[in-house]
Image (cartoon, rainbow, N blue to C red; front, side, top):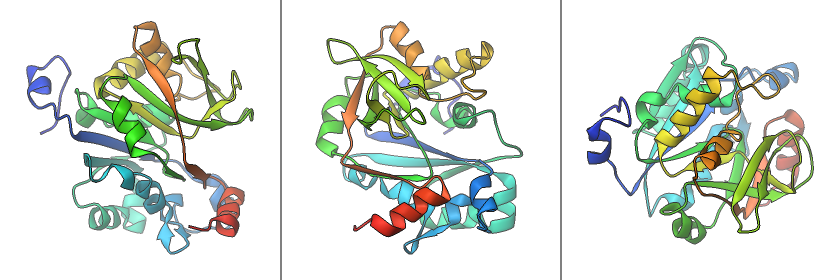
Length: 259
């Protein structure tokens, strides 16, 4: 069933504690890889025998035994048509949903918003980059996933190219900033919302107010709206994280990953 709005009583009736919707936005141009001579869309680039998107999805192997996962891929129609991306994704992830876009959006948050019909409900929501591979602790996640409104996995950094979460005296996130080191807690591109409709409410407000950050709609700052509404957000540790978003980062992974 496709959900139409969180006010619909069916949202509550169809709520499933074990279900997680995982949206992977991959509707970018991948211009840096094109300039470097790659002839496939970034999600299909081979990385040690697997495509880049397969590495991203394998980040959620730790959830498989405890949750029912529905993957939702948001992609460019030209990639679906020219490179057989739809067939590839359906073969790898038979129960996935695929949303095709005719053009690039104004940022990751707006791209994920295109999945509104699937995530505007009470079920858990994870948003994750298609060019990142990470590992996490399932027990840490299970402890907090039921009672905390949002979880932001973080690692230590002060590099302004990342998003950052500031923590208050009680251990809750008090602010999230994009491309500004307001703390040493840098996000790795995974964002958890206990209810998908919390994301929808926040992103609709962001778009309505044209609240752009560096010219784009980012996911991280959406937590500021949740915090203002009294929601509790925490950070969590990452076992390991590898970003494959540029040719240089991909080469570093190829040279150094020992898994």
